Image 1 (cartoon, rainbow, N blue to C red):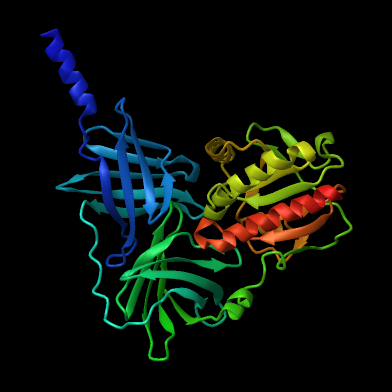
Image 2: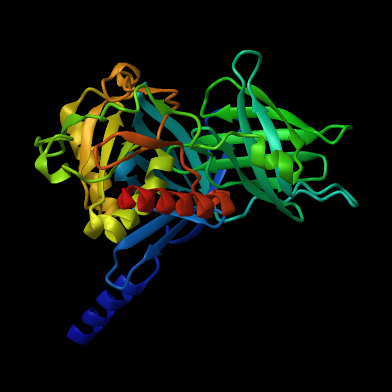
Length: 403
C-alpha cells in the first residue's frame, strides 16, 4: 500500500501538465488584427513550471510560471507584465496586462496547439530578402527605418531599425503578393501588413497595440543606400557644451544618493546610460554593458544607468529597478532619474542637444566631459548591426581608457 502510494506520487509529479508543451499564441489588440508568437511551457523534474516567449529564434524567459489546475499565470516581472489564461477546450484563453505610462493595458490572448497555416507562395514571386528603406506614418509624422528581411519560402522574418533602436524579432508570412509581420516581446505589440506594388515597392498598414493604424511604404535599397539611409547612432545627440563635465545626482533603488561627484568616480572614464526597465532595447543593451563593465572595471571604467520609469510611484519604480538588476545580474549602479513624462525637461537631459529616446549611452572621459554619444541600440535581431555596434562600443571604451 505504501509502495503504491509512493509510486502514484512520483507518477503524478512526472506526468505532463495539460498546459505544458508548445502553444501557438496570439494577442488580439483589435479583432481581426492578431499579433502572433509562441509559448513553450515546461515542467521540471521537481514539478516546477518554466516558460519562454518565442518570436522565431528569439526567446524571452518568463520570470515565473504557475498552473493551479485552472489558471496559467506567466509573469514578466521586470516589465511589470503578466499573462493569465484558462483552458478553453483544447486551447487557452485569457489576457496579457502590464503597466504603462498611460496606465494599465490589457489585451485579449488565445493559444492553440495548431500552428497558423502558411499561405501558398505564388510561383515565381519576387523574394523580399534584403534591406528596405521604410517610411512609417503620414505627412509631418514620418519615422524612417530600415527593414532587414529574410524570406525562406512563405516564411518571412526580420526587424526594423530606427534612430532609437529596433522593433525586435518580426516574423510572419509572404504569399508573393501580401506580407504579414508581427512581434510581441512583453512590450512591443506590433503588426505590419502590406502588399507588393507593380513598381516593386511595398505599402501597407502598421498597428501598435490598439492604436489607430498608420500607413507605411518601403523600397529596396542597394548596399550603398542601406549604409547611409539612417545616420549613425553616434551622430544624433551631442553635449551642449563639450567643455563642461556631465553631472548627475539621483537615488538608487535602496534610496542611497549617488552622484557623479562621488570619490569613487573621480578621474575615471564613465558610461552613463539613459534607460527604462520597460524598454526592450534597454533590456538588450544591459548584458552588453555588463560585459563592458566586467572587462574594463579593473582598468578604471565606471558604468551608471539612469532609469526613467512610467509612474510617479516611488516604491513601484524601486521594485522594477531591483527586478531589472536581479534579472541581468547588473553590478553597477542603476539610479532612478525620473519618469518618461518628465525626462525631456530633466537636468540629465537638458545638458544635451538632439536626444531621441531610450537607450542613449554617453561616453565620458576622465574629467567627465561627454566625448561621444550613441542614440538607440541595435539588438540581436539586427544581426551584423548588433555585432558592429558592440565592437564600436568596445573601441570607444578603449579610447576613453587611453585618455
